[in-house]
Amino acid sequence: MLHIFPLTVLRGLCIYINNAWCMNSTTTESHCSPNAEFLMVKCRPYYLPTELTSIILTAVYIPPDANARLAMKELSAAINKHQNKHPEAAFIVAGDFNHTNLKTVLPRFHQHVSCHTRGDKTLDHVYSNLAGAYKATPLPHIGQSDHLSLFLTPRYSPLIQRVKPAVRTIKVWPEGTDTVLQDRFKNTDWNMFTHTDLDQYASSVLDYISKTTDSVTTQKRITMYPNQKPWMNRDVRLLLKARNTAFRSGDAHAYSTARANLKKGIKKAKHHYKKKVEEHFSNSNPRRMWQGLQTITDYRTTKPSPTSSDVSFLNELNNFYVRFERGSPTTTTKTDMTPDHQPLTLSPTDVGAVLSRINVHKAAGPDGIPGRVLRACSGELAGVLTDILNLSLAHAVVPACFKSTSIVPIPKNSNPSSLNDYRPVALTPIITKCLEQLVLAHFKSCLPPTLDPHQFAYRQNRSTEDAVSIALHSVLSHLDNNNTYSRMLFIDFSSTFNTIHPSQLIRKLTDLGISSLICKWLLDFLTNRPQHVRLDNRCSSTITMNTGVPQGCVMSPFLYSLFTHDCRPADGSNTIIKFADDTTVIGLISDNDETAYREEVDRLAEWCDTNNLLLNTKKTKELIVDYRRNADSHPPIH
Image 1 (cartoon, rainbow, N blue to C red):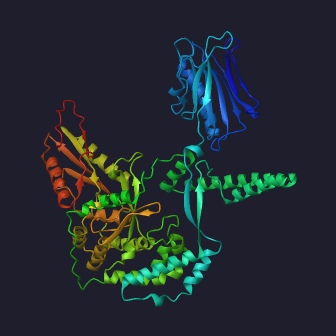
Image 2: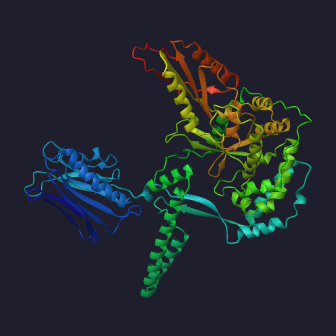
Image 3: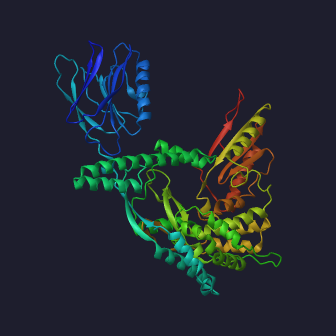
């Protein structure tokens, strides 16, 4: 189908394309210099995998006396230009490369020729941007050529054959669903759910909301194909069906009209997708910016699901996550109530405001109530939910349905080999997250802004940049003095959130002046938590948790920062800088006296042992900054 010949005598190149393979080809670029000659042709074959838009062929000849660096620079510049213009095209670069190697400038390209092509040397190369695209087989010389011929057998498997389609069950919202739900909840007599038992009161309300939502929505199974274009939407699919129907009807005019409508629809869908991507860069939100960069570069981190979704494996995971329950007390001491503390009271306006800000794209919790319902019906549901939340805060009791947690195991790396390679992320009911936001705002208002000045996470007007600046300033300022150096210990903890004892946390919050009623409510929130591991449609058995703060909850990171507020240096020459659970001990050492620094590290180890935090010594690293010319060797910290 394809033949590439370097015409070395005439200083030129040619590409022959079999008409049975492709009749749509265009020369896009040609180049001739003392260092390199190449010809680029863009083809659109009759058959092409959906994920590829075209094939760009490049015939190359590099003279034996060429400057390899300049030759590869010229060739790579042309290929990069066309890759930017055609990011979804397949690139095939073939020819006589002599002493050069394209991978030195384009490391993502793959070389498919492994046999000798002239004597005992491999001078002819075939590169492509597709791994394993071809298998090269040597054939006899053609005519008087002193190079072997190469027969390339295609080995590329289309993406749809390499990656199985993903089947998802989604909730379909017919037009006007939000209005129907608003009318139903507005006309509901919520007093009939009132009960002296708060658990029964809350669960009956949530069950009613869930069943009402299910009655006006339907479920649909959709198949997500790996080669599906990101701009593809429902309108384009309907236009595709209309075009296919017109083609089968044999009506030439209808078919022509359907093709024109499809072309307009695709153009409109691409324009809409372009605007959607550009919105990522329309504000100063760094998270949205990185999401936009991942979208336009097609960067996807490989986070495979667990290899087994068998219930026994899920039970094993759940038992692993609750391993810190062993050895911890099964009962926790309730805090004493003091008459001077009034319960936190929420207004329907406060609750409605939080409901109206719900991110509808967040996954629903174990109750199955989507965020869309709570947001769309915030005005209708604010009253009854405010009553439930105020009763919970007044009695310092959290309904069991609010504490129910589904743990989703997220792989920490691309090749998980042990249970510890799965991070437990908690999915709690969305209404619980709303309650956490309201309590968290109360927490922050009760604490002095000067609390733990070297904790840079979850504080207003503080960031990682501030933490790095403080660390660098203290070290570099100290190194300006004579006979000084610095030691920096970067500490890593194991399963930080899972090892916290709620009773210890409550004692620390009480010392900070937090209301005893709020402390009691928080203790109830963190204990007797029913937890199960969920993967796809399978769930493990339920285990009750009394240790740790769930990863994925709104308050967990802030509670951890309060739990560690008393981890402070005892000596003025040391500094402990924290960003959430990332902790760095900085020792400013003068005259080779490390006593204060080493004692500080010992005190930190004791503090961790007292507070049930586990140091990960394998990941804990130390950096020594010493600019002295005649510095002695530094003994390790342990």
